[in-house]
Image (cartoon, rainbow, N blue to C red; front, side):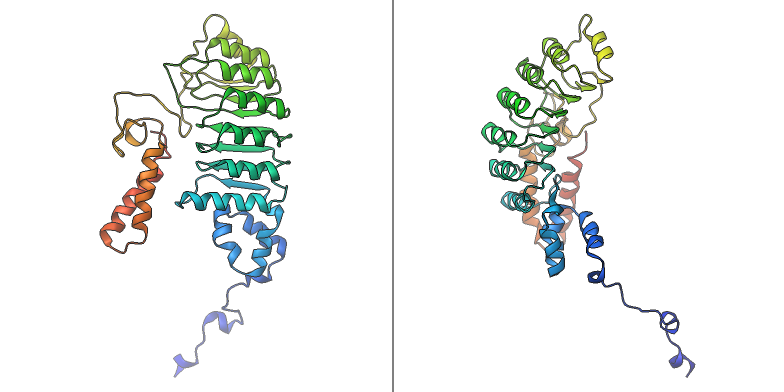
Length: 330
């Protein structure tokens, strides 16, 4: 009966076959591990594992950086709740926040109440916030150094007030959909007038002309990098191109390739093959995160999520692939 007398190799050597006890890790090690998770993973699962992890996740220092980009397929109200919760937990320690697609005035109010130490704020494709909400928050961010607000509806007055209230601002990314039919230098003038300390400026798809660009060069003498891709109204005529090359260390011209996610490239002759509208998303154009297309897609995915039908699961897989592909440049 030799077989019955044999023992597993690990047991014969006196080694334990049990896995590590994560609760025995030093608190700082556990904190570092949890920091590797995203906010949605922390709020929806990690914080519910045990009392110790819950206490760590409640620590305001856990929420100095909040990255709410690439959110999961949650209903909009749940995304808003999940965003407001860590902002409030930060208790004034918040330094860096990024929100993609679902920022509201209520979220901005929370940032204003808890964000006196915010140095970096990124708001991407957030159409539900208003100028009033933005004005309220920038007034409370005196040490803001980097501000990105892309593909949202923001007035020149909000930009001007941002410059006046955030005197330490060094980086501004203010990106829009391309509009070849409309020329406007108001935003460029607001930047030139109130943001003399800017080092880096990105204006993808902006409607400014050579006149607005000249004002920026005069008003922002410390500017080191300037991104003018898809600014179709900028001609860089006369000596303006030469001055840009001399004054700006890192310069991207309007005709340079647009490799950033979400840049809109106008094409009136093509229609989206995914949603059937001339919206510029999916296969039909360059602005790949059209609200109409993704809203319908997400609603369908939510409906299919709980189905056990094999055909529904196959269709869900196809739609998910389309959804994630929509964040790639066409």
